[in-house]
Length: 235
Ligand SMILES: C[S@@+](CC[C@H](N)C(=O)[O-])C[C@H]1O[C@@H](n2cnc3c(N)ncnc32)[C@H](O)[C@@H]1O
Image (cartoon, rainbow, N blue to C red; front, top):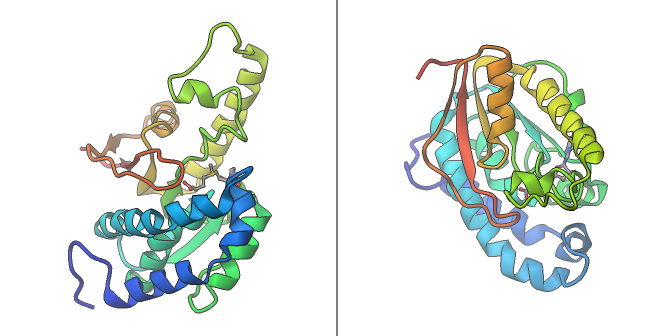
């Protein structure tokens, strides 16, 4: 298939729009917001599709056909990237997300595409992957309330609980280690500028070369900028 360098293929674009149209935003409201879910999705749905598609176009240049991608914490924002991989690169994707309500909303909306989200810990994924996507997972304030402020440079020396922080840091390091251990080298990691330190730490520990891409791409929901990291390849 001949593709534009700046856009997703027309079929992918049509299907991405269809899936965003089919999503049950009433059910997604409480997944993302304590209140005001309807207004949130009214404002975010368009940017989610647009910015997600832009990242998907960049990702398409970095992946080979027919490989496997592990998506940790993939939700509404990841739909364009996932669909691009399946529809344009003929790749296998395994998206994991611990929020059951989001997974039950995403899967029916994706019924026309070979794409199924799993409400299971991504660390349980089997086999090797040449691409790991981990975006806004390791700095999630809901899951890591003591570690997240430090990730965003907002730590407070007065209120920091070092015991709780250390417990969360251990969980983050364990998740990174389990997921990075599944990456075939050379491989690609898609992550955020806040989370890239954990990937770098793992690479240093294992003496594996890595290169963090210089370009950052905005995201619509959490808002953390995405970057790409080449693993196991000398710059
Ligand atoms: C803040 S949300 C980010 C969602 C999405 N990546 C985005 O940027 O909009 C973090 C997500 O990571 C998921 N998550 C955290 N740890 C996980 C794990 N071990 N396996 C699968 N999903 C996980 C959570 O369930 C949640 O859906």
